[in-house]
Each structure stands twice: as C-alpha cells, then as structure tokens.
Image 1 (tube, one colour):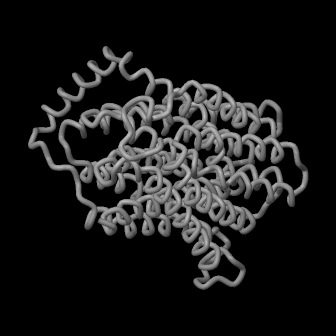
Image 2 (tube, rainbow, N blue to C red):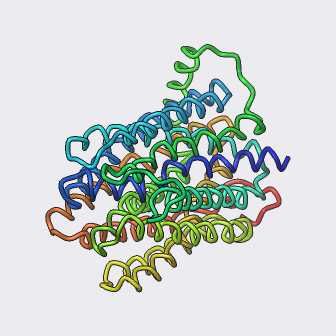
Image 3 (cartoon, helix red, strand yellow):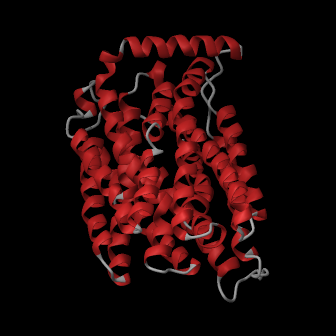
Length: 423
C-alpha cells in the first residue's frame, strides 16, 4: 500500500527535474540573460513560447483524458509524454549563448513543456484509484511537497555540481557549458525518478478497446458532458476559478528567475539560491497544509493560500530592497504548494469516476486555455512600460480574480456525501 503511493508521489519529484531548473530558474534565466538580445526581449519570447505550449496542452487535454477514460490504462500515456519531455530537454545542451539559438531553444522547451504538462493529466487521474477520499488531501499535498523537494535537490546538484566557482565537476565556461548541462541533468533526473511509478504503482485495467473505438467514444463522451454541463456546474465554476489563479501561478513560475535576474540584478548563482529557498518553503507549505486540506477542506485551503500569495506578492512588487525581496519571496513560497495540491484533491473528490481522466483533462484545460494570457500580459506590459515590475503586477490581479470566483465554489461535502472526511 505505502510503496505504491510513495512511488506515485515520486513522479512529482521526477517531473520537477524539468519544471524547476529548466522552465523556472536556471535555463529560463540563462535564456533571458545570455541567449536573447536583452532581458526584456527574452521575457517576451519566453512568455509567448509558454503560452503556445499551454494552449496546445489545454485544447488537447480533454480529448486525451476522455480517450484514457475509454481505454482504461494511464501508464502508457504517462510514459509517452515523459519521453516527449525528456528528449528535447537533453538537446538543450546544444543551445549556445548567442541569439542565433533563440528559436531552437524556444522550440525544445515548448516540446518539453507539452510533454511534462500532458503527462500530469494521466498522473493526476490515478490518485482516486489509489487512496480513499478522506486521505486524498494529504497524499496530493505530499506529492506536491515531494515535487518541491525534488526540484530543490536538482537545483543543489546543478549549483554545487556544475555552476559554483569550485564545482564538483568542472566544465568550460566560455560557451556556458556549466549552465547548459542543466538540460541533460534535468532529463536524467526525470527519467530515473519516474521509474518507480511504472514498476510499483498499479494501473487501471485495460478495457480491451482499439484506439479508434476509444477516440470515437471519447468524442461522444465529451459531447455528452457538454450537453449535461448543468449537472457539473460546480466543477465548471471551480475550473474557471482555477483558470484565473493558476494562470497567475504559471506566470510567476515562468518569470520568477527572469524577474530576479532583471529587476534585482541577480547572477545565475543567486537565482539558483533563491530557487532553492523557494522550493524549501513551498515544500514545507505543501506538506503542512496537506493535513489542513483533510481537516477543513480543499476550498478553504485554496482561499487561505490565495491570500498568502497576494499579500507578499504586493510587497515584492513595491520593494527596491533585495533583502525584502528574499524575505517575502520565501514567505510567498509557503502558499504555492497548497493551492495546487488542494485544487487537485478538490477535483479528485468530486469528479465522477467514469469521467475522471476527462475531468482532469479539463483541469489541464483550465490551467492552459488562457495560459497564453498571463505570459503575454507580462511580456507586453514589460515591453510597453519598460519595467518588469509593471509586467509582474498582472500576476496579482489573476490571484484576486481567482479568489473572487472561488468564493462561489461549494465544498466537496456539499456536492456529494462525504466518506469519513470533513471536506
């Protein structure tokens, strides 16, 4: 029992070998500072790329999830999309610090983002089959917490193994090999730590249907879900709220390293150190709030977490002090994990069993349908205002709007009878 659950949770750890060092901190900052012509241009290009990748995942997610519902098994989909993420990530090694490598870098990270995000649709859908409702909050939270620990250790390995002034493994610095190695390192991290999921976590049984039949049934399933949308209006409202605040989170992750480097002049080493600190506080928050989720409910946990993102976020935008930026940035990190973990547990408790993967496809859609808007807003506002602070202020507005919509979302216990749970 424990082995299958920890093996499932370890995939969050593995997945962050891409999202933390590549999409958020090390490679994102390297792209903006060394590959693009300027930090502002790099910010805009990075935002456009993430927006395009998110839109692809969002539009394809519901169909993929519905196909998985019809076929039964989740692991083959997870394996395919894991490889789609890992292979382009390895190839980031070849991206030199020169503007001629802008488009190869953007295309590779775009493919990696599609693979990593799509794999999470099927990974998330496995949770209700592995644990009863009264323990979903803690396992969802522990999974997110392990993701932050994995990201933290990967950053530490990158820092002390390659980037520090006296690294364990010295690489030539003239062509930024000591930074570019993060591509192969992140891919290896992802592949190695994903293995326990495939070895020890049981999959849903196959329904023995051909792929063509699954696709036809999936399209009919989506049509029926749209026709009966009123019976799922609570989920629609929740997905709208998540669409807003998750866009804020995704944008913050995408531009966290770029903002630290551009506004506060942080070096790659300092960006990594900040990323390490942020992962520590985020991991602690996800683990601690996991218990709160099971006690007071996912909805309440999400609302508390959004307040914890808004207030420190405003201070970060207004301050000129690096010290204040560090303090409130780390404080903000405490609330990053809980809002994501509790979103997953809320839907896991309320999604109809026969539509579970489709609902998690819509979950991905809610995080990706307008995901181009956040990065585009940050990119264009940054360019027009000539200030990253003004660009990042759009993130706070997304949190506020998401919280307002979330106030109208019911508790899971008010949707269907609870099973030994206070949610």
